[in-house]
Picture 1 (cartoon, one colour):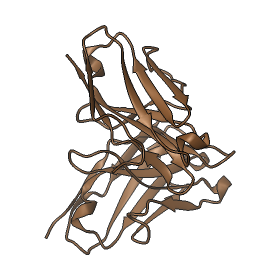
Picture 2 (cartoon, chains in turn purple, orange; picture 1 turned 180 degrees about the vertical axis):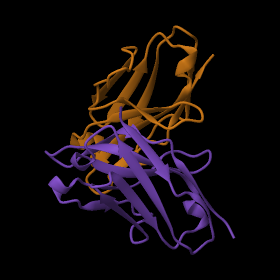
Picture 3 (cartoon, helix red, strand yellow; picture 1 turned 45 degrees about the vertical axis):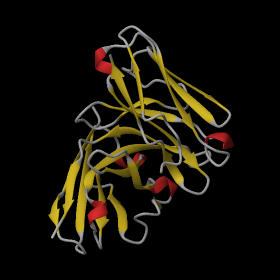
Length: 125
Length: 110
């Protein structure tokens, strides 16, 4: 059974950094792209970014709203994906989800097969 | 403002059929990219409902179906049940934005 468990959320002051982790099990982690999403209270889903598998270079893509501030990385030996967030502001407060991602090798399209339960990030002074 | 446009809400009585539309543009759905749908039950994480325009993952009832035409896609739910009450999101790929979503549609079962 595919399981994704996010951790690392909490209360952080504006301007500070935070790193989230997504620990995966039930599948060969290194074979899949991994993505991060967020959802502010009462709002819709917002894609944050994804990291391709090493077979596709392990490269990353980001939403414009977080590019330059957020960094996604992965440790295939530990089956963990990370989201490093810096210069946080109140607009970054949300539940953050990680997902196992299906990557179309034909053209780079993606969709999101399995989701974790999310971890809450609160940004407040 | 979401790149893909969905109605904010739809409703239907138990047993009825409802559809949720998802309208994009020539840089995403109209460019031939696939549309995928997600269901988010209250207080839970989203779940993949339809992928590749019309395919259902294992475990998703065949009451749920998806279609795509031109710059739009639709999710249809037949034989509506109380447990279908949820938020539904469409998603596609965009040549410049990469991943795009609809704003979500709240389904109310009357």
